Image 1: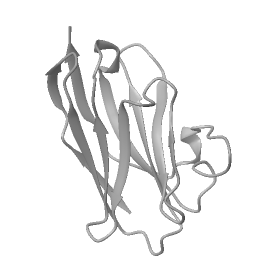
Image 2 (image 1 turned 60 degrees about the vertical axis):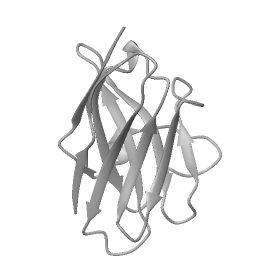
Image 3 (image 1 turned 90 degrees about the vertical axis):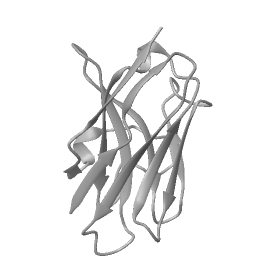
Image 4 (image 1 turned 120 degrees about the horizontal axis):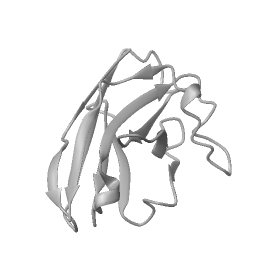
Length: 129
């Protein structure tokens, strides 16, 4: 399995960015793609995930209403559209894949990064005030 992120960059507060995660190598649709981020000096934070079996999506409270995750199954690509960006959104963003699905499911999303077997290289997002 290979995950390749793109779309990071620098924007001013209030701006928007769209991150892409191109996935290859999954043998079935029994997988989920999550987005995580890590700011300098801080731990890894779960941002969002999408369950490719039933298209359920989950969001961290800190991004709910501002970020939207979606998938283009024909292109095997997951997108994270980020709007109303804040300086505190500055971080390296990683997409990660889990198969089988243990985290991105159920009524409450835990955002447990250890459930994700596959990770991309990360893409930097910088939001200036």
